[in-house]
Structure formats: C-alpha cells, structure tokens
Image (cartoon, rainbow, N blue to C red):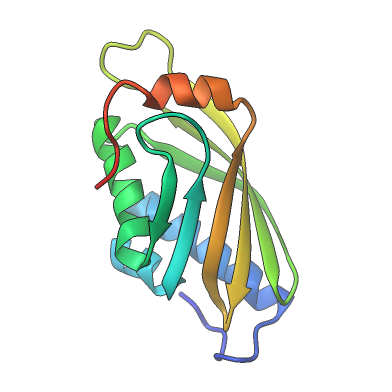
Length: 146
C-alpha cells in the first residue's frame, strides 16, 4: 500500500511503492496495483510484437498486465529481485516467466523496469528486456492489448 504523503516522496517511499506494485500484481490484486499508479501514468513497452506500444492511464497499464496473463493462461509470474530508488526515479530489477499454448519453450525474461515517480506514484515507466528478440518472438503470436 502506498504510504507516501503526496508531495513528500522519498527514496524509501518510492521504493516501497514499486514493491507494493509488484506484490499487488503477484497477488492478482488489481485495485492495489492501480493505487500505485498516477492517474495519467504511461507505460512504454518496446519491441515488435502485438503487445508493444504506449499504455496511457491506470486502466490501460493494468489492462496490459491482465492481457499478458490471459494470453499465457495465467502462467505469467513476476519475481522482483531489487528496487533502486531516489526521490524522482526508481528501477525494478525483475524476472518474469510465462508459457504459451503451442510454444515449446517458456519465456524467462530478465527485466529492468525504469520508472519516473511523482507524488509517491508511478508516473511513467519503460520496460527494458534482456533479449528483446526473444520477447518479441514469445509475444508475437497473438494480441495482448486489452
């Protein structure tokens, strides 16, 4: 849960917001995940597959995750390794795994999730994958956008 008072973001508070975001997603608590996001949040997803692009607003960002979970038949899991933060930026170092029907090899992707924080909320973020070609191949078979 976001315990940072608006306008008083700290490195510790921002790191906790990111931890809360990942914990909420892992629990499937979409409302808690939404509360960590600024209303005008933007998620930038790189690559050349069906789920790439910019997701604007809380619902779109949560919809991106729901879509990915749906396509993978609920096998998408997130493991947060570390959060690095100051009073304006945060970086989550994570690994996600997933399988897809019809694909023989599951995806295990190491990820740097770079975030701009504003008033103790995630305002804008970018996903950076270990192997973008592998990620594109995995997600390329069918649409993920919600």
